[in-house]
Length: 115
Image (cartoon, rainbow, N blue to C red; front, side, top):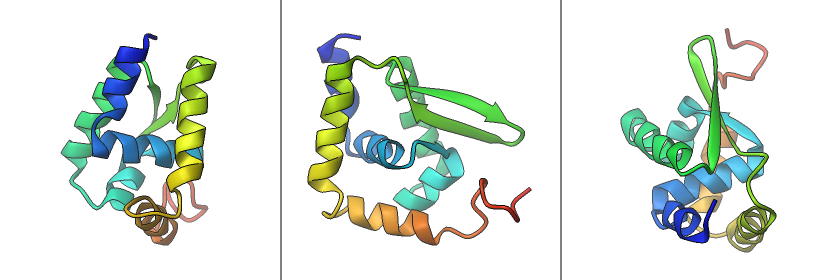
């Protein structure tokens, strides 16, 4: 991955918020990101598709759910950028609000009661 592609992917607020949630959580499904960001599913899916095409995230399907995570083979410098950014903004808005919404989400796909 080249730096231009990576930073273009981070250049949109919705994509950056998705990436920081993924960096904090490890893996999230589209419904979790939709809830956390308080935006529509098509908008989240469009941004996740752009991140996937840029080579920043990968997805996996599990039944009805599509889960996303940051690519494990992302260059070390790109992983460091995400970690430093996460550490610097995790208590600031809108990132703190996104994480709080995610924490309050009922029936999360990974929860024991969720089918």
